[in-house]
Amino acid sequence: MRLGILDAELSICTIDGLEDLGAIQERRIREQMPERARLEDLAFFYMPDRDWIVVNRGHRLSGYYADIIKTYLELPPKGRKQCAACGEVRDALKILDDIIFRRRLIYGEVLPYLTEGRKEAAE
Image (cartoon, rainbow, N blue to C red; front, side, top):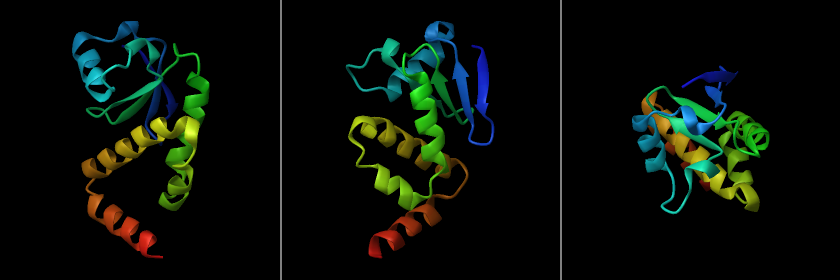
């Protein structure tokens, strides 16, 4: 699988299409997808073993999703909450929230993150 770096600091890469995926990687990606979703419709996915968000350049809206991902990851938690109401990208934002949570688990930042969320909710 050939990956291109989109943003090294945010760990965002690109892939030219999903044809290069090996069977193991494809199975891992399918585990992240809703039941009825088709692999061909996948705009981006997460590779937890490498902590990369991978944008599928073969998707017709790959540029749009790449911009959303970069912008959303750079927002503070309060800004992300405000974006959660955005209707047309709501599903993508839920996936990104899950990725952010998983990254915090990896790097041991879960408890401060949960505490931070509770403080903001109380304000």
